[in-house]
Image 1 (cartoon, rainbow, N blue to C red):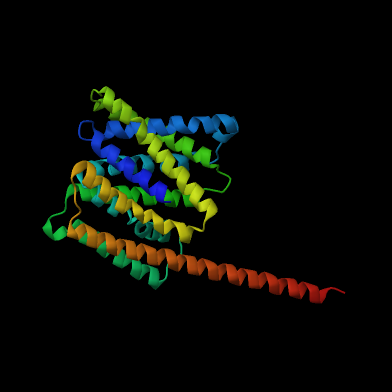
Image 2 (tube, rainbow, N blue to C red):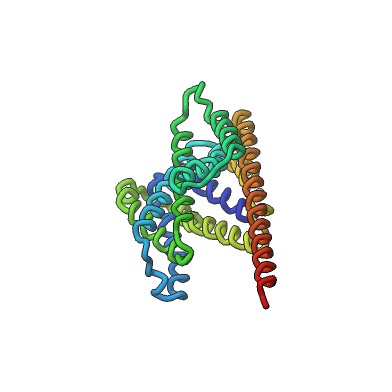
Length: 295
């Protein structure tokens, strides 16, 4: 998870550097195209059957939301400090809760609602609407909302949809959607920039791989809090590469958001453990009743 957090922060630093001379839509198109090329070997190995799906519209929606999230995040990274752009992404669980209630009819009790309200207070501390809302902050929040929408769409996907299928159709949809906008704003690219452009896909691919490995060898509640190291990495890279320092409101707002989302994660884990305990007790009781009825 620490490696994953570093790769995500490194991706942000790469985007910020390239975004000083290249349009965001051009970078977004290249990011999606590289991601699609990286998933093609997995499609080749698993065979053409991986392309079969019974949910094309869900894949289309997931691809469009993901494309919008990438474009919004790239815009935010190039117009905000790395620390600000990173901290605002920690609000994702807060958006997911609201969307899950609306579209998945999930039951959310008062503790999670309270933590969500506190988390959004942290967002307001960062955005500082009393000083006039910065457009880049609104774009960043839009990107977080789009990522949260992706989570909801993926939650609604049946388990039969393989990861390679989801990744392929995301890459295909996002690349196609950004092709025309990217070409319309295309700027000449220097050899040095071409050397950095592959890292738009490689850093994202490496971060995703590290998350998968982390969740395979450790419980989600144990490893996911280490994702907040992204903020430390982003702050360090922002200072070293771009002479950026986070403001006091950014630090305070990020702290509130992190505290709220950690509480939500711990609360969800406790509820899940209690549900598993009750299910196991019910199975034991059913087995005992079955033994008593045997002749």
